[in-house]
Length: 228
Image 1: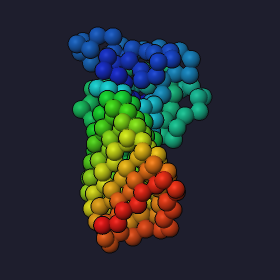
Image 2: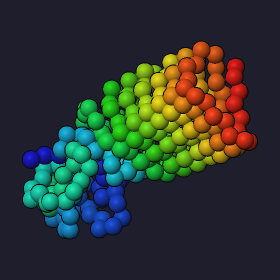
Image 3: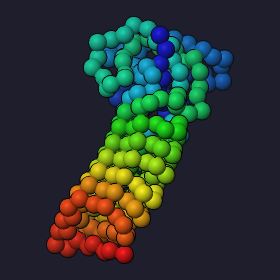
Image 4: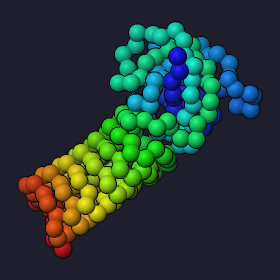
């Protein structure tokens, strides 16, 4: 059986706890050696779904694995755990997949996905600035302090939250769910945007253009709403 996994730049597991090196000698010919993974085993995406559920580290690597010895660990959808794995191939980007599950982009992490990918929820943290391909479908989006996210043309998203000093750029004619602009967050919606309900919290700022279609708008005391 084969699957896919995201690793750090030195081919170790993303999570600090029980960190495992999957490719001790990156210069050696592939396939790599069999690696015994203790405890719950290695979390492996079987078809690309759930691939980024462990996070997106800086300079991440995507690998194709051969896997053995499944463990009964409860995992995200599309992910299973295995006690024995080896690296078969180093990939330039994740496999073309219909879904990749939830994504948390850590500080200075980068992200490159195939076109028309369906993503679960995205959290963008301080220092991170991921790029999504055209026609991406995204669940909810949370852009935290110091994080930055630009959505391409024809993106459809669920709910959006922009936090203090977070930056989110939407394309023209974007379709989103509900929008929350939190304290010291700032968001400008482009022309012809369709949104659900909007909340502008105290200290938040929202700019709406003409021809925007929204649900109900609430502006808390100290919040700012500008129509252009």
